[in-house]
Every structure is written in structure tokens, then in C-alpha cells.
Image (cartoon, rainbow, N blue to C red; front, side, top):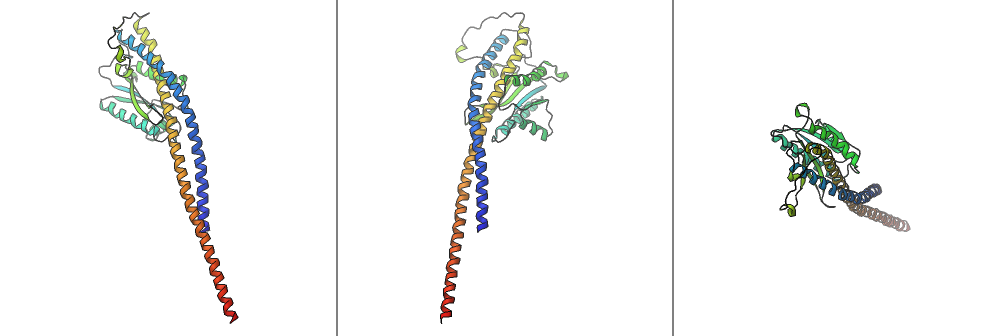
Length: 306
């Protein structure tokens, strides 16, 4: 029984060390969520107002432009998937990958060829393991993205949209990321960035529907204005998606680490009970052996006295 008690003690020590690690990771993730939430709150108004401005230009212009013009028969679509660089975040990355796979199936069902762009080592590893082609990938900044990172991601996407499909370009641009709803809820979503539509931009508020639309004059031209606005629009949307994903990643990791810490506490309690039972069994056995030895000695002594 002594060997069994040593096994329990080693397991309790191991689980306690794991608990310290998961607790520390939970606290780190909790501290980073606050910063990520502030960044999301700061970037969302800019992205919304820029989208509203682009929509205003689009509605006031008759120029055909990749930013606003629907292709009659689109043949290729780009899908940007945002995952995490690190694990230990529950189903955060896998849920985003599932949403991207579902979008890919839908686009292929519409007869479109899908070109994948991936952010995060988890997504890159997923596509690499399954030997699926990826046009471009980026890693190393998913937990704390900057606008420079968003620009680095957006540039090849914009170039693909502006390139003719016969030369490897795309007709549509979609993005799949995890939207931060609350500390307990993070939802994978897919949105179409280009061509721009009112459904995806949320450009009109309910209160503004009855207002008279203004007339616009463009300098030097409406096409030049759209050319200047399109990079800013895509960059701001990608940046906001990266920030939403980062906040979701930290929240998911905090929740996963809290669950791991709670499970470790329960396992320690269970192992402690088993260790106490083993110790009690050892004590009982020792007492029995002492009593038995004393009884045998007493019987032997009584026999010699006769």
C-alpha cells in the first residue's frame, strides 16, 4: 500500500503544477481581453464611418468599379480565414475553420473556384496537413494585431480583386473570423467585403431611411475617389476583423484555462481522498500487524510459562 500512496502523491504534485500553469494563463488572458476590447471599440466607429462614406460614393456614382460592381457570372472568390497562432483556446480555431469550410462548400456549389488566404498558425497547419493550396498566409500577430499587420494582409487581397480572373484574380472577397459578442460568447461569422453591398456594410440606419439623399460631385473623378477609398475600406475591415478575432481568442483561452483549472482542482480533491484512504489502509494494516504480533507473543509467553 505504501507504493500506491507514493503514486497518488506524485500525481497530486503533477496536477498541482499543471493547475498553477493554467491559472497563470487564465489570468494573462483575462488581462489581455480588456486591451483587446478597447481596440475593438476604438476601431469599429472608424470602419463603420469609412464604410458609410464608401457607400455614399457608390450610390452617387455610375462608374463600374470592383469595389461596387457585381460581376454577372463570378468564377473565382477569395476567402480570408482568421485563426490563432497558439492553442489552448478551446474550439476557437476549429470553429472558425469549420465556418470557412462551410463557406467554401457554398461558394463551390455556386460554381465558383475558391482561393484561400489564411491568418494564424492553426489555420496554416490545418491546410498544410490536408495538402490544400493556400494563396498566402500570415502568422505571428494574431493575439495582438496592428494596422500594419492588417495592411500587410489586405494588400494581396486588393491586388487579387483588381486583377482579371484570367490572370489569377478574383471576383469576390470574403472573410471568416470570430466575432466578439461578450466574454462568454464568440461567434464565427463570414462576411463579403467586395463587391460592396448594403447588406454587408450596414450603411443605412433605420432613422435615415426617409432622409433625402444628397447629390455628390467627385474631384478629380468618381473612379479616382473609389480607387483611393477601396484600400482604406479593405484595410479597415480586415483590421477590425483581426481585432475582433484577437479579443475572441483571449476570451476563449481564458474560458478554456478556467475550465482546466477547475478540473485540476476536482482531480486534486479526488486524488487526495484516494491518498487519504490509502494512508488509512496502511495505518490499519500496521495496527493489525502490531496487534497480531503482540497476541502471538503473548500466546508464546503463556505457553513457555506452563
